[in-house]
Image (tube, rainbow, N blue to C red; front, top):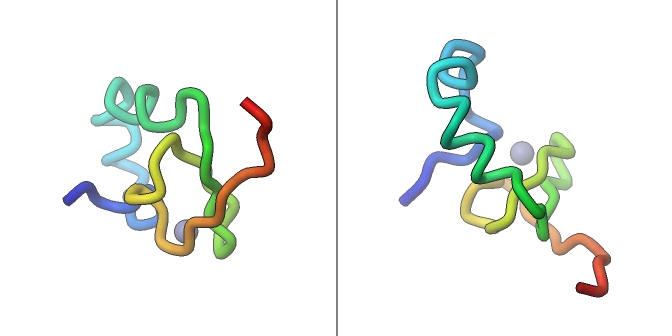
Length: 54
Ligand SMILES: [Zn+2]
């Protein structure tokens, strides 16, 4: 199971920048706690679906 972006440390963000780029590409979900976004809800702690019509 992937680690939620909400839990990533600053260092991890820099180290895993390429993975992060894939996760936040074409976001379909947003975290209602911290407003991070991702294409899959597994990467967020409190995911809600973004109102996108595509
Ligand atoms: Zn969050």
